[in-house]
Image (tube, rainbow, N blue to C red):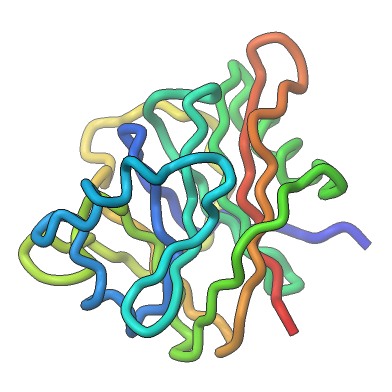
Length: 196
């Protein structure tokens, strides 16, 4: 049975990757103040889907430059507990998001497992710290309609990222890199499904 998806948040990227990690690990990520992001950059490639953070791991949402150099990462939650992050570029923005969420998983690249024992799953820019003065600005998820546009409107919270409340447990990441549906309509998708 097809999943039903609800848009719950978005993250603005200037091309930097995002981390998906347990809320309790946020103080352990020092992307800016301890130059952890600078140390990560030389290791970035399409095969890397997770990194150690503190006593556990964070999943890596490595934005796809073939989809866009900057823009929104749209975050969705499904009725079966799955979570999807979609990067899209198309004239029909809403249409490409819907298509990305419905696209088969057969060609997805298997990725890391992210453990969320606290029940709080945070998405933060890897270029920032997890907490503190240089930390990510986290907002509770905000369920609402799927965005119709990728336009950057006045007052858009480009410094904010969603914090999701989930059942404690683990998610397995799979990635579908740049996928072209038709000319000038492309997307990439990071799918988090409940593990075990």
